[in-house]
Image 1 (cartoon, one colour):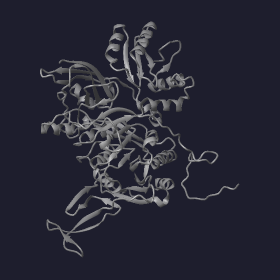
Image 2 (image 1 turned 180 degrees about the horizontal axis):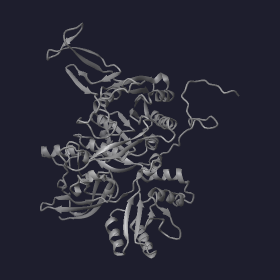
Image 3 (image 1 turned 90 degrees about the horizontal axis):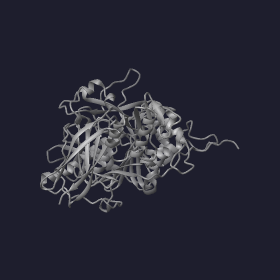
Length: 617
């Protein structure tokens, strides 16, 4: 049968298999793990303190529904967006009004986020630590980029409601190809606009091109039933013109329909006598919005897009959330939102940004946790044939050891490898490393005449650091606990050798009970063994142990599941100070409580400590 071409489409190597079938990425539905729950932000708590209100008057978000009144919580999800979007389909297919994505532009380079260190009043170059925020590099070049984007645009199409929209933000590098990919999935008839975001920042052409000073935001509707909210733009005139009017300040103006070119400061008509300015100017170094996250887009731009393409209580999603601009825009405009990113700095930046919003609605931080790791290990190391939770254990261990710079060893019961003079134990994909496992590794090291053990783990049994390190030292074994980073599951990070195994940090706190029964938590010490990863000039700017702390929070009644913020404080670019003492907490009755303290350091790593507290009657 002759090959027949019956439609126009963009084709690239890898889009179709050898038999001419469209390659479909695997569809998975993994359970989400709620790792943090935030019912009250710092800004809200500070406002309540100023008003003299109780800190316990918070909205009960224990039962989730489809709106805030029924217990909906907004969602900040850390993980691979393809797995996240696929896992959301079970509950959210056809329910999202607006998906905005600002994906990597196929630049072919990694981007770094600037992290400020310490409490210096003046931003100095020496106080900046740069870490990779995301990787805009593709193993097979444009082919793999297009396959990656096609999968995500297809998933977005399935999540979007019949009256909903996809907004895809890109620049000159990818606009032509992504337009064709989107047209194929949504249908050419559902393409609504190419919105041009124009900006006049520095930089000039190199003699071969004109300066490239705009991005494209492609807008597709799910169906013909999708209606956007047209906006009127007020333009002020030097003098009267045909049909112009005069406002209360005596200025001449005309109101016109907002067009698809957005630049500078736009004055939008909100009502009969109300106008609002939306600044879509880019976020520059001295901007008050600036988070230090690369490719950050202006809040005014996302505010305007949210207003045009969604309504109150609609669900808005961004699966490349970056610095959190979409989440903030959705939050401040009364939309429900789901935000996702692969990078830990993106999640941390977004979380802090949301916490600064007064009366921010409850939100939770989720991931796919061990379920994502199981999927990754099964995809890379084979099936769990005997049902013991282990997948080709030897291949998995060899892979982790290679990334760590170690080599496998034979003849041991518990230890898996060696790096230099130290033995190495690799924790399982699915389960936390336990005290018992570490004790077995240390004892075997002792029997084998070893003096050092490095234990690598994804997760850890709560409260194990102090007792196991102390016992190992008593036995004459130097024990080092290393975190297996999530980046191990990113092929590009592995290919480029960007895997860092961080030592577990040491955290110490003091819980002080006051005479009136209130309890205050005080950070008394924090040490990170990872100072070798900090450039010398940056390390010299660090004056005290607290300079390593960027954020900390307290769950006053930890129930061995989700961390619930009872107190939280953190540094911002505007305020580099950090209090080391929590607000007082009042327990409703006497008893024994578990208090969980979580610290996030300048590398974006979490360190937690669980303390048992006996509250007197």
